[in-house]
Every structure is written in C-alpha cells, then in structure tokens.
Amino acid sequence: MKVPVGEVGESLLVSDAKAPVSPPSVTHRYAWLSVLVWLIAVLPIIQIIRSPEIHQWDFRVYYSAAMTFDQGYDPFDATQREAVFPAPFMEYFYPPVSLYLFQPLTALQFGTAYHLWFGLKLLALLLLLLIWHRTFEPLNPRYPMVLFFLLAYSGTLYLDLVAGNIALFEQLVLWLGFAFLLRRRYLPFGFCIALAAQFKLQPIFFLGLLFVVEARPRWLELGISLAGFLGLLSLNFLLQPALMQSFVARIAAGGGNLDERGAINPSMLAFIRDGVDILSKSIRQLPPHAGSLIYILVVLGVLTLCLHVFRIHRKKNPESDLRSLIYISILVFCTIAPRMKDYSYVLCLLPTLSILRRRKDALVPIWAAFVFAPSVSSYVPLPVFGNISVLATYIYSYLPLLAAGMMLGLYLDEFRRGDLNLERLRENGIRKQEEHRCWPTYK
Image 1 (cartoon, rainbow, N blue to C red):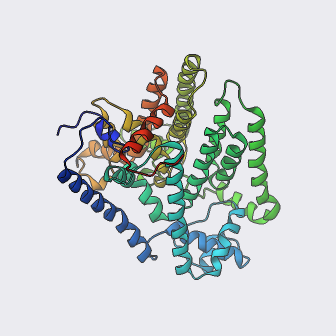
Image 2 (cartoon, rainbow, N blue to C red):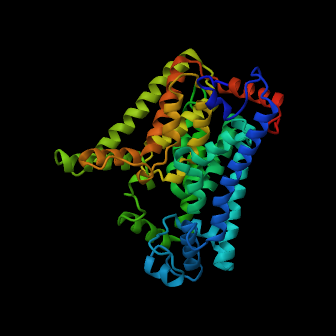
Image 3 (cartoon, one colour):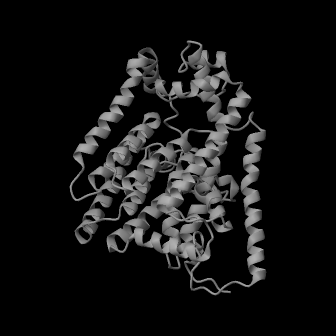
C-alpha cells in the first residue's frame, strides 16, 4: 500500500480514522515489529544496569562530590575530591546547595547508589512521558513512536540515561511548569522554572514566556518568580559561603567545561567558535573574540525574528495558542543556548514530534533525516580529502543544533501564516486514539 507524503510523521502518534483497516497478517507483522523495537529499546537499559564501571559517569562525580562534602572537604577542588572518591577527568560544577540533594546517597555503597539513581531516572522518564501524553501530545506504544524516542536528536534520550546526568529531572520540573502554564497558573509555572534553573541557570530563559502569554505581560508573576529564583540561589551564600566562593572562583578560572565543542556540546556558541577556527586556519585569521561577537549577533537576530513573527501573529490572533508558544520557546532556547549538551536535546523531542506529524509536504523525509541522523561523524563515511572532510565533519557534529533550527523555522512559518492551533490538533489526535484504542486516554 502506498503511503501518502506526510503519513510517516502522523503515524508516530495516531492512525487516520478513515484509513482502510489493515488485514490480520499485516497487523500481526506490525505487532512483532513493535516487540522487536521494544527489545532493542530495553537492551541498552540492561547494559547500563549491568556495567556501573563504564556508565553514568556524571552520577559518579555527583557521588564523589557529595561524599567529599559529607567529609568536610571542598568538592570543587579536584585534588581533594579525587582523594575521597575518584571520578577521573570529571569536575563538579553545580552550586553548593545542590550537594544536599546528593548527600543522602553517600550513606549507600556506590553500586547501590548507582542503581538507585538509575531507577529514579527511569521513574522520572515515565512521569515525563505521562505529562507529555496527558497534557501535550497523545502518545502510543507502537514501533514508530518508540523508534522516534530512540533515534531522534542523535539518540538524546539514550545519551541522557548513559551519562547519568541530572538533566532528566530538570526536564521533568520544566515540563511540569509548562503544564501549569497551559492552565494559566503562572505562579506555579514560575516556581518550577526558578527551581529548574538552580542547577544550570540557563532555564531561567523560560520566564520570558510571561511576557507573551497574554496581551499584557504578567509583571507581578514575573517579579515574584525572579525573586524566588534569586532567593533560592542566595541559599548558596547563606548556607555555604566558603564553598560558594570556591565554586565562583573555579568557574571564573575557566572550569565547567564551558568551551566543549562538537558532538558532545552541539550548541550555537560552540558551532560558531568551531566555524571561526576553521575559517582562521583555512582562509584568514579572525580576531580573538570574533566567535563571541558573532554569537551575540546571531542570538539577537533569532530573537528579533521570533518577536517580529510573533507580533504579526498576535495582531491576527489576539488569543495565541499557549502550546505553540511553549514549543517555539523551547526550540528558540535550544537554538541559542550557549551550552547545549547532547543529552539536553530531550527538550526538543515533543515539539519536533508535534511538527513532524502534522506536515503534509514532500520535504518531511529531509527534515526527518536531520532529526534522526547521529551527530558523531564516525558513524557515516565522510569525504577524506582536504577541506571538504573538515567541513563535512564540522556540519555533521552539529546536526542536533541544525535539526532544532529547522524545526524552529517550521513553527515560525506556521505561526506567520496563522494556521497553528495545537489545541485543536491535539483534540483531533485524542479522538482518533479513542477510536483505535491504541493508548489509554486521560481526561
């Protein structure tokens, strides 16, 4: 049976209620295919559980820092921390108050704490999927959906589980805040953003949504949310002033891996800095701070473009769809963030899923190829001669960033044309789910 253009994207979520019913043999084949894909999805999880010595390296440094803190030493001093519990080539770069969250785990042996942490991450993932399904996009357990979550953005979800980073918990708090925002509960939304920003600071960007959710900015809720963020951050100075001083000094000295580049940190700033380096080596030497200046200009350009499109849309549609605003803000954040680790692109999964399932034109396979392609260039043979090899490797390492930029462009195009109503689309999707009973529907 020939698949119409765009049906691949839609099949990620629901089947067309008007489509002909597949014969039993085809249904049976698809059922076995779903089982096979689920087995592929579970195998990496089993491997992570069985091999604590090579996986969840970020958790290892959390455990090391918390144990160092518990024994009264400075976890931001790598020498002191390595003497207590080794985490080679890793550094702890979260504010001191975060150590109180990890400290209870030091009462357990590392192996036990490792498995407990991984279990908590899986629980956070299940809760995240539940929030997505109940509030944002209807999901189902069929193989196209599972493959999407396995492969999208260079396997970002798998990379998060392997690294053992705190990012999945951060995502859970962020999406809980977005769910509050959909219900126009602005103070709980602001509190969730303020809480999520305590570790990596960058998520404070999403408080900007309070400027655009209604015709007039929500100044009161924005002020209270910012005060909450600063209040929580000030606990570091009140409870651990010496460690906060050590933390700030280490960051100021160039710590925190702020200049990571390539597939491990496919951010806009890293992309531009790598590009400047390539141009300096192959064409002409650029000034030392050219990368930072170009990055600032690009960020201002992206924000200006988005605000311009939003103003046009707001004039035509005074009541903007909050779900679309959230998705666009996520893609803007992922596109312009100065630091965007490979596992952080979990944030892009739902906006990307939503846009790909709706597009009905011939370019869908091209956009999908960017979303599903791995970012590590060694996976794909690249030209081996001269500058073409350098350029190909450079572009390929930043595919998650380029994919997020493409998705942002698609959203802005729909926003500009004024035909983006995700609430209506979601209701249609849920209705189709109820007809096919492919996933439990929540009221």
